[in-house]
Amino acid sequence: MRIIQIFWLAGLGLLSPLGVKAADAVEIKLEFTTQSVVQGKYAPRHVMAVWVADAQTNYVKTLLRLGQKRQNKLHTWNQARGSDDRVDGVTGATVAEHQTHRVLWKGDNAEGKPVPAGQYFLVIEFTENNRQGPLAHVPVQIGGPAGQVTVSDVAGFKEIKATVSSAAGK
Image 1 (cartoon, rainbow, N blue to C red):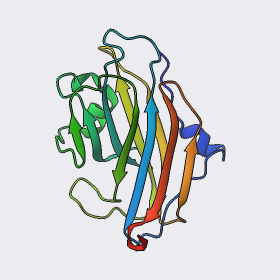
Image 2 (image 1 turned 90 degrees about the horizontal axis):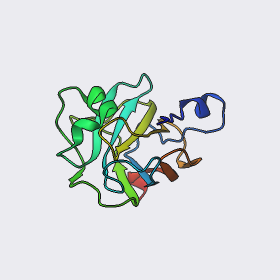
Image 3 (image 1 turned 60 degrees about the vertical axis):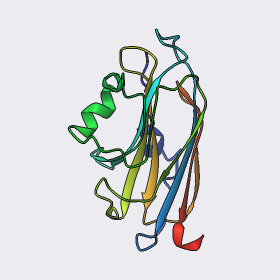
Image 4 (image 1 turned 30 degrees about the vertical axis):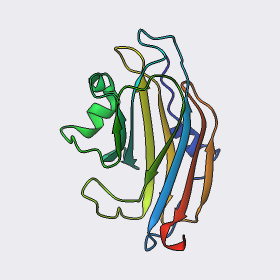
């Protein structure tokens, strides 16, 4: 199975990381749809995690984890989070079918403190097998202009978009 990462898109200038000023309260809404890459052993059922990583790909916090029983098959997420079992967002059962997901990040770390200005990645991983599944990295900028970034469809994911706004302006 081919693992797709989209770091290179940002480096080529094909994606413009978006963000808001560091002093603002931040809301970043991520929306994406999962799809089968290879009909896995459990397909269409799958486990999934969404987390935040900084520009150096260091783990910041988990936003979503679905499927506790097979969460050990989310190899990249498990390696990134280490022993941090906190999920500062949504948890749930194994996903029964591929669908559209919506996740919210308020610009904070696992301790609930605001992150410093800079580039971050919203990382999405799922698997419908007992091995590594597809990954997507969505770049966002804390400390830049508000707006929306749409990422081209990649293996396992389609209709990926992140909307960055100031929560104070709502």
